[in-house]
Image 1 (cartoon, rainbow, N blue to C red):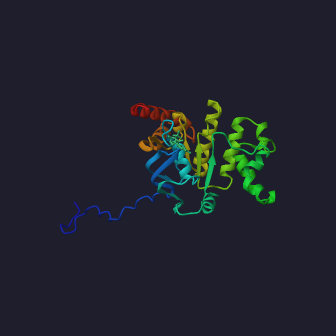
Image 2 (image 1 turned 120 degrees about the vertical axis):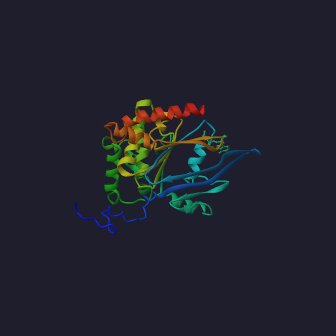
Image 3 (image 1 turned 60 degrees about the vertical axis):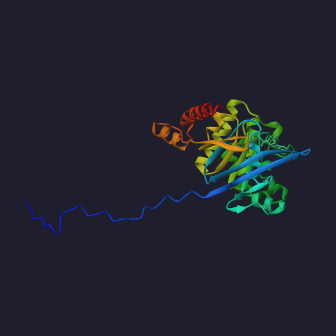
Length: 290
Ligand code: ADP
């Protein structure tokens, strides 16, 4: 038996104590701090938002749900600087929007926020590619100065075959793809989409959501959508439920997606895992009595 000195026992060397490094928190692209919004019409005040705080970390997809009139659109408009809060603050890439003049807010928004609306909001007399590159077209820039980016974005949304058509000559799904391409053209920090599938049939709507999901997964695009459709909401990593202008509840779906992916989901965008997430959202809404 080998001699083992008592004073120097053969023990496993103690692991060096290292301070455990925390994973760096993802940067917050957009933050709402205690937002209150009152509307006043004919002397009557309506409190549309009543103290909403929300962090939108980079690369995250957040869905906002809630009954009609609960403040979803108001929240999205405030997050995008389309309207200002009565009190509270919106931080866009760390910069507070309050105190800025309208012109400065427009500048802060430009390039940082891409909007997608239910009714596409395309310019009817411009072609698909002119709509996508709209600010550059308006600025009178030479097309060759932005053609490469335009081609890239057109390919990302799958509109290669209709670039020279007018909005009236393409389908609703293609119109929404055009609107999404327009939103991502300046490489915004965040896309804000208000009921992006509200004017589309179920199948086309799903294709649009899969496109948004792919932009998140492949390009790390940060996305916030407002929707009343639980299946659409389930594309998010997180769903928040607004009621009477407040966040009543939230559900984190990122783990649902991961566990489902381990179980053999074949799809990168989690479409199979999407079934599990949709079930989780439906069960959560049922629990809320929504
Ligand atoms: P949601 O998108 O959830 O349907 P909204 O944000 O559109 O809810 O509206 C929240 C509340 O604020 C509702 O009571 C609505 O009537 C009111 N509201 C929204 N916009 C305006 C406005 N421009 N003027 C007056 N009241 C408004």
